Structure formats: C-alpha cells, structure tokens
Amino acid sequence: MRTDPSPQSESEAMLHDEELSILRDISQSVAFADDRQGKMGQLIADGYVMKAGDLFELTPKGVTAVEEHAASLGASDAEQARASSDRLI
Image (cartoon, rainbow, N blue to C red; front, side):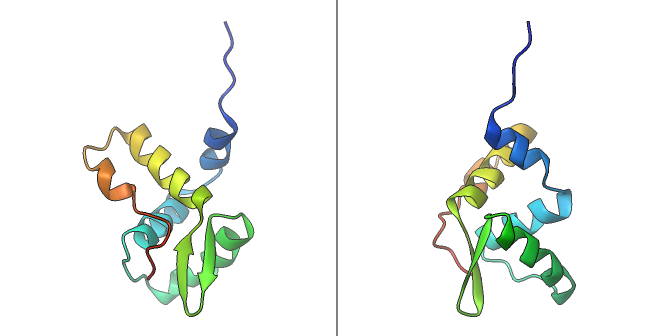
C-alpha cells in the first residue's frame, strides 16, 4: 500500500536544518547572527517568514513547519515550537 505525504510535509522536507533553525529562533524571539541574514530572503520568498519593519515574524506556513518539525523529532518541548505567528525578533 502506498501513501502519499501531505503537501505540508513535502514543503517542510525541502527546508534544510539551518533554515529550520532560523524559523525556530524567530518563533522563540531569539536574535540571530548576521551571517544567517542571507537565508532570510529565501524563507521570505518561500512564504515562511515576513518582514515587519526591522523585524521578522513567522507566517502561518512558518509556524506549521516549526510545529511539524518538532513533532517529527518527538520533541518533549513541542510547546516551545508552537509560538504564535505574532512573536517578533
């Protein structure tokens, strides 16, 4: 029996560890180093992050990616990954 992955899982699978790390940092309002700024443009273009003035915030798609990643790891601290999309850094 063949089961197809959900579209959200496919989009998450395309994210690299560094990109997921950036999304988690944004969701937890953690500042990140300037060398990671280059990845932000791609995350914005892919619809995971949006710019709010000088800050960034997760879109619903970004929140979902962080939550799904935490669930796939079986993280006991999944609550931390469930930051609302209005948290800014």
